[in-house]
Image 1: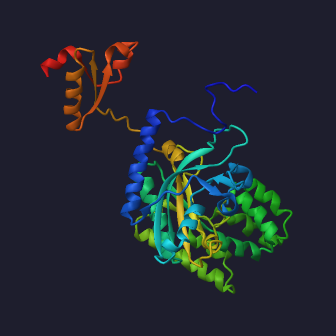
Image 2: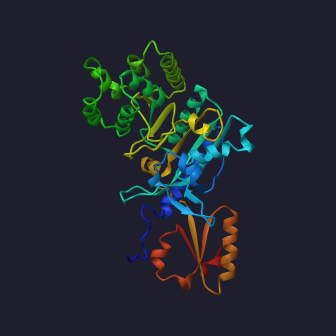
Image 3: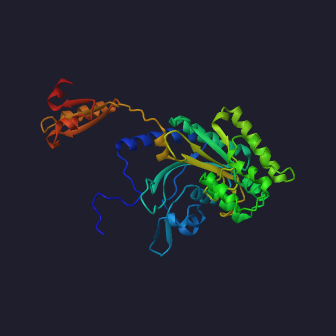
Length: 387
């Protein structure tokens, strides 16, 4: 097969200057808030061992980019950031400093089987709070995600909150085994109400409970969850009261109207073991990011600690942010051989005062008019003597 010189690998994209500038602005705004909240930014390697990060990650095996190193060991391009940060947190350097707050802005890689508008490489921005299993840690990361959404200008932002463990217990009360529950959660992830209704006919759910089962996808507040709580199950009661307290925290902090509590909400990221959430905004048909509690993942690195966090998709944030066209003044100085020294001195002087200045040898410009249209001010060599 012949590859055209302008083709890119499947799922890869070029960021042209306008997009690159918008992403840089998002990065600056988001990471500033992350640091203000007490999180330290870190960077993990692009390549990780398949035996550790590849197997532990919740990303399916066929979505991993794999390659071999010179010793024959299988490596992967990092498919997410939570697993690598969990590895870092389990190191001797940090395990004695729990709880620790780590933030990041990094590229992740997920192979695509076909081009469907889905990138195989994209940036994520997020945080991980490791070593705190309290409800307040969950509230902290959700509130921080919300602050970032508002700071970068996401329109009609909202967050949907669920609970993986509580949903698992409720489905068991309907008589479902683990395999049946898994099928139901897959349909919940896809928000496939028709599929849930069709599957319910094959499940061992008594007729008097069928309406209650189908109503799982209609909850919007914690009070709606009460109807499914088993008063004889202490774990369910505790988790339900935790969610009541969480809802109250959000109301006190002004997030009440922005949060939807959906008991049917489930995540495709299998390492989430407790509270889970997704972020949405106008302009994007996909979640802008997701997060939740993943205590079980830390156990795979030998740590019996709580952990929670989130990751936001930068490409999807761009879809929800109303771009403001900021005309940043930029000066072009055109020079020839006679005016080169004066042009250089003028550029240095202007740059020292904080201005953006481009120096360009005039004879090298093929089409002068379209080139100079890019700048708000043009200074030609012959005008340099006049200031």
